Length: 81
Image (cartoon, rainbow, N blue to C red; front, side, top):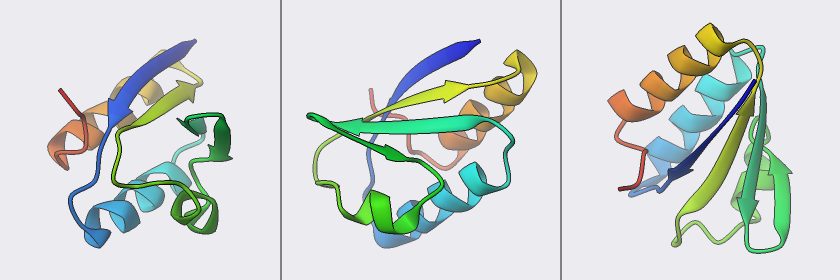
């Protein structure tokens, strides 16, 4: 199953939290900004993107694990309206 969500960051702590949540998940996380795609578990890859604009995240895996991860994004105020 795949679920797409738009996220945005307001500070560097959110970037670190995002990567930590992704790294502890067994889901595949693909992050897109423009024409660039990176692994959502890679802090270096994430920092190579323009973090001032919203990013598009595709979470691929078991539906319960996807739901838990996206709930974590929401609790961390990462989900963009």
